[in-house]
Figure 1 (cartoon, rainbow, N blue to C red):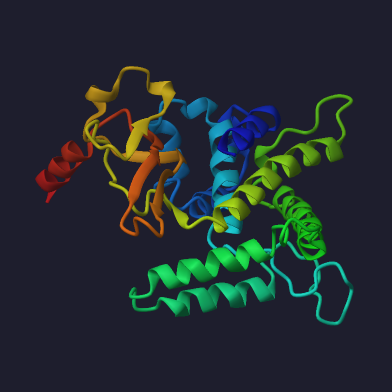
Figure 2 (cartoon, rainbow, N blue to C red):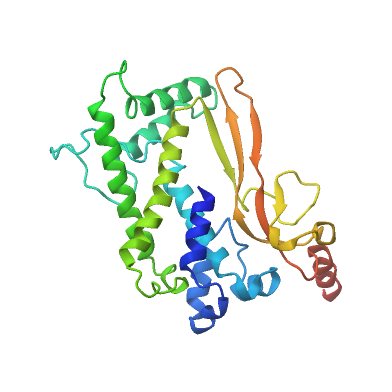
Length: 296
């Protein structure tokens, strides 16, 4: 999923960050704010001057934008696509919109209420997975028209979401115009496929008794430690890890991913993907603290 988004960014975004120089400061502030959890909440100039690829960090900015968008759309609510009468055009059906359905939003709130005190985790997860399964699988090996209509509806929702993403005022300045002979609808269809892959993965996970936890910069440490099992330096840093101990983490391309739970092992929690981070190459946070302390 992440690699599909990264490849799309590499094919359709500006690599050089000089494009940002022509944009107002307010745009750069809003872009950093939108990437909260994936970028340290500091000035964009501080980020670009600090990370390894600063002058050619455009692909990474777009990748982070898309990864965060996908996770928020598909992985925070396991019922994001569910509607009671999908594709029937009845008064109870919902309009195809680029956001979670009203029905799915209510179901997610109900799931939270099932375990609002943390004492009914297994019951809540059981209800979650069977609700998702009934919306997606065959019934006793028979054709499930409801699930097929739900899948068709889900595909239309994803297409609407991608259209919304491509029209986002924060993303558009970072994207190159389509190459000669390449049509905008082809560019969109490629991103449609990447988003649909993420959407279908979220559906598959919602039907399992395990669940997935994503941890970004709001959850992990703010400085790089080579001994930390939750983070790894981006490949751009090669073998520099030990020299960057204590340096600030400025950006995270991909979050840390844990697989958790399970009916047989409710306390199970395993890290399956380390957070891919970019750190400041200059002064360590410790040195900055001591410098600031000397000025006071």
